[in-house]
Image (cartoon, rainbow, N blue to C red):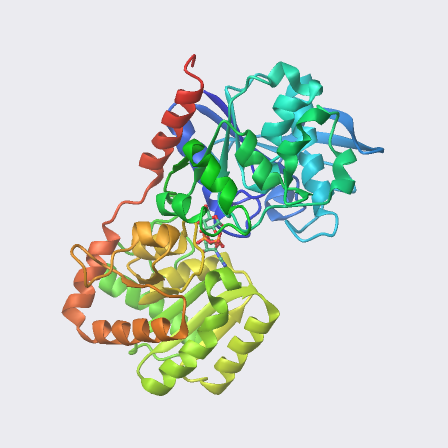
Length: 474
Ligand code: ADP
Ligand code: GLC
């Protein structure tokens, strides 16, 4: 099957979070299974693009309202990522360094989608399916069916994956003219609550939508930033498919980013060696349990709760555990965490920023990984930490619910709590310290989690089964 994945992120080309990891892995596993999956994304002026060679495979121009945009489609020359990678470059609009947060982001993502459709339409390509990820490509299913420019492709099945239902990419009706010629009798499909809402439009117009865990499919009907009723109505079109992890990248035996590599047989020594590197760098002692947090410092992740919860835990268990943060995000939370570090400098350190290699070392060297998420559609951090022998401490929500069983329950191996609250985090910290001090139990659980299989093989097949149900001629 020939499939195009459309996404704003793809590891290692451009990454902000888990969307990149998924789009950098799923197509690779689909290709290994004999399909032809390619990724199409906006051009970013970043390291991967600067260091690799590309061919220009298509040049054209298109209209965004009254503004004529010249665009190019670039293809990475070697397919070294395990899939064909195409970049949409539009000088002056899609050729910048950052992935998000420009004031003309709406224009950027509309132009990205139009350029993609123009390209496959005018170059007479006929993919078997188009797979859109998140709201950045959410208008494609609508445009395929309701713009006469793309009638040749109108029968192409579309799958839309929701990685994050909190962000909709909504914009005002005053920007309707940015869309190419559409059937104006169908504009209701673009609308939600008086705005053009690409996420809502995708859910209405795609052939099938998926969420990145089964539990998140249910949760969207209760909490999706205003789209709850839509998800309730459209639920028949939805399927929850749990993300996998790219075990070629995330393998403690071969991971080039780790100071010390290890396997399920050598983990006690290997993890300790990584912990020593971390503790030396961050001025922490190696003989205490090390709890870590990695991630975007946003309300969704419960990051605003962490400083208070840790302060209470440091007071409750003086000198009994260490805490390390790697993340960036809301300024207020960053400041709170830096103040926590200053106040508890012997037990706590905080790295504000993005550092892929450090993240790998923390998954390998920490003892516990804290994830007090309010919303977690899937979560990859807990899957990486499981594979690297670090026990996750997760709130019971979304993909965290689907992947972590509390060690107090049958077959359990992690720490799970029900509320994104200071109290529940403190209780989890107490349980972590107690568990750590029971070395036999702790080491046995580490062995269990390292053997769990969350690889892409199973999930990639589930996507293919879904595709085939939509395009049985293949
Ligand atoms: P989300 O996509 O919501 O941020 P996920 O758990 O799906 O959450 O994925 C987060 C990904 O981003 C993981 O690969 C994680 O290691 C990585 N990550 C998050 N913050 C940082 C950071 N500050 N430095 C390095 N990697 C990070
Ligand atoms: C989103 C979600 C996260 C998920 C990731 C990849 O960023 O917040 O939970 O793991 O997408 O699907």
